[in-house]
Length: 351
Image (cartoon, rainbow, N blue to C red; front, side, top):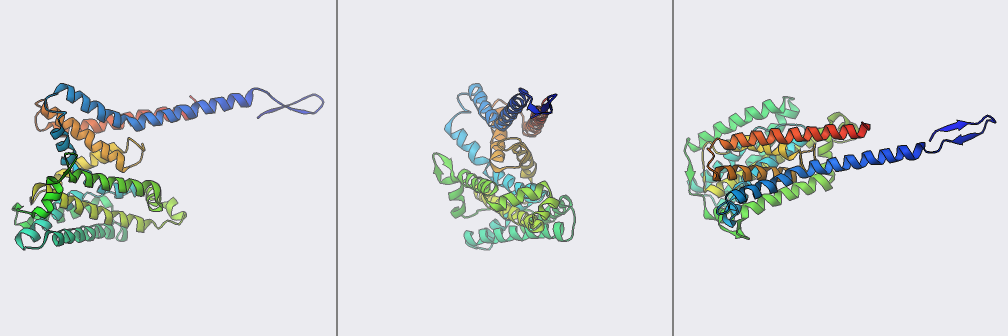
């Protein structure tokens, strides 16, 4: 509040100034909140609109229960791979080895179970241990040695792919035990295979950790500024190392789901998930909590992409449409996010 001085030296407040400023600030705050809500809801709304559009275009096939169940279940592995990426991405690192880990984990399960007669439970446990160890190796070279995560994980992905080809003899190994296949694709709830609910459960757990636990807050702070995080007492290197280890674990789980879905493991399997997972991770960062990598946003992004790709395939689009759709959807979503951010910044400055 400003003041004015009378001729007799007394001080009086100027009326009308503070209420005007308060009203202006309140209006800007409302505009910012509206923009944030719009930005956060665009992708979920787009998911619904894409589904409805293709349901109207192909009413006899696209909106059927069987097709919806197929779309939901078929992307469970991609959901897990995307969630695996989120941990190092949130901590400020990249992990390009997640796709190779998926294929390697699936191959370990198939080799041990089919070729060596291990119970599928022990084979699964071995794959999870290997995933944890691979994540620890990535963290060692990135954090202890000090090499950029992009280089480390690109190199480890190549090495892991080589090991997969070696142990498999470059052959597909089929015949994985039904004890793994049945819970993944045979058993259903509400006509949807259980693999979808497994991926959904992992996403919900990660969302809870990110939003409601000190660990999740430390992870976010580390990614936004490691120097500031250290000053606040956060053990940055431990957080980053943990993100790589958990990324390896979730990638191994995705490999198990992949082996259960197909009942086999291919020597080059898993690599096809890397780019779609990155697209879903960055696309998901534009919704729910815009500007942040978040599990629920990534889950929505995965199904936004698959609903669109499947719809185009029903309309007779060629196979390469999947790559075109992934790239176009990502560019449009990020562009929209930038427009909303500029408007939000303009609202804050009062222009």
